[in-house]
Length: 401
Image 1 (cartoon, one colour):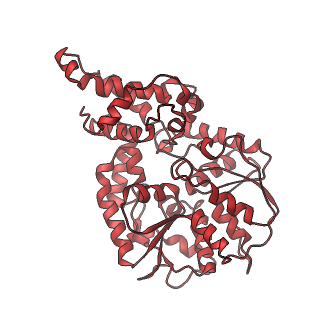
Image 2 (cartoon, rainbow, N blue to C red):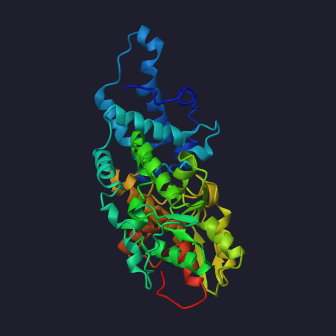
Image 3 (spheres, helix red, strand yellow):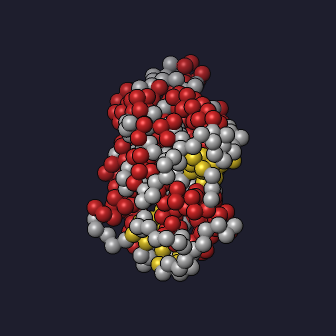
């Protein structure tokens, strides 16, 4: 197996771990599985011993034998059973960039043909349909038809100031489609000139990053950038934190990029969204990619404080320490049972606050937590902050959502 995907810094980091075990103590996958094999330090040791050490000059001089294929297969299975939440990196005393190391590792394993079977399904879906679920990409904006008063143009304009990049989850999962519907209604109410890309929106690339398939990414990036440029957009907004992070970190665009909470807060501050009272006690779940990934912690909380009648109680683990919901890193496709156990632990923590609703700012978090709540008949409401703000928006009432 080639090691060319690892940078010199990453090779040094892989051998620098002090085995302090702090990362193992906070890893949601290792905790839910009760398996040390999923702990980040175990994975880091595997990178060093299985993928790097046998490729050194000394190893060649000593004629060290390469790792057995069976060992690589076992290691690959565990390497993909991770949500890429970044909690391990946040506690590493050496500052090892673990999340970047994990995505590089997945790329190396895929190149070496050691990966779970589901990864090939992700590849086929992206190649054939331009979305991770293999759905008809022409149906990306069909959620607009579910609105109470959909506009004739369907929010697909030839020219607009802002592109609303919907994301695969909100485009295709009925449970999550309430989020773009609410967001479009809010933007309309605030007078924001926005457009959807519709079928010209392709996957942002985040599933490729998590699946070790970044060799596919360039074509998707160039397509999305061209589609936004064709509409004369000056900004893009994302209700999906993973889409937001991909554009921020991998697109290299001159567009001004906003997460949904950041744009909504600016509209609230500008007085463009008159809000009425909602009597509700809520807690807030920081999405991994929006919080630890992009540093957006304050905007959602400021929005909650701006809604009259909302009482916020914080989770035991919040902001930088927030626990993953289980929906990241393609884990649901690779090990759905493990993802479900992580979600169960998240909901237990939410219930301990006594809140009647958990609010987040991620369509994937909403989908994962709602699925657990419904499956187990838990008396808890799960809302995206977009949905909560739409509910508080003064004016003609529409069905909650």
